[in-house]
Length: 84
Image: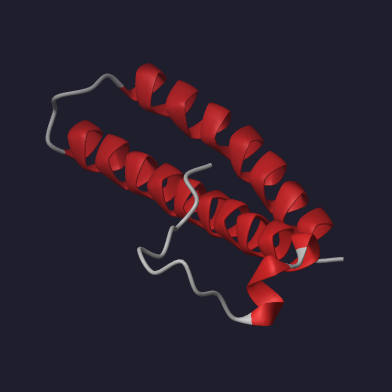
């Protein structure tokens, strides 16, 4: 992950702690998982719209929906595990 760097060489004391740095990286990853879930829901929405507009076959939309259900469960499980 890209770490935020302050130009100034002075740091607050807590920023020097490895645990604080790891917590920041963890929070970034947890946020990424949430963004990935939101993006997946956008894909589902766009697939349904494409099907309804006649740009996508029903079976292809169903395939995307089924794959998205599995990915959503995986992302939800990962998020729950991260927040324990």
